Image (tube, rainbow, N blue to C red; front, side):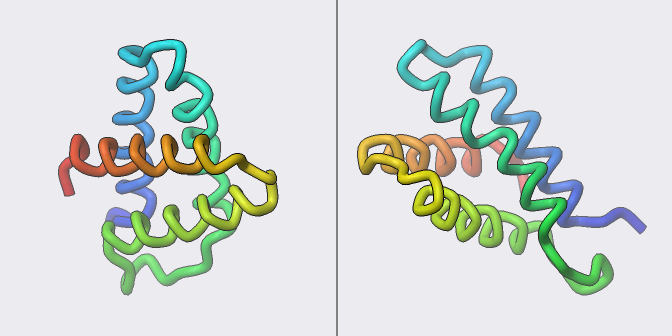
Length: 95
């Protein structure tokens, strides 16, 4: 059985990599920030693959980003843009 949490992470990674290729210079930092966070969430998340949904990855990742923003002292405009791009990635990625 495929792990839906991992599968969703890789779907989103593919979307973000495509977005990175299309991005203007002003969005490269934000997208480049998000991509490695996907792997960190996969490393750190504790869950049962039999009881998790793909959508739970989305919520876990968003919570993770908020924590990472605080730890990294991220400026508000950068936080806002990353959130915008995250929502774009969600819309572009099939669930």
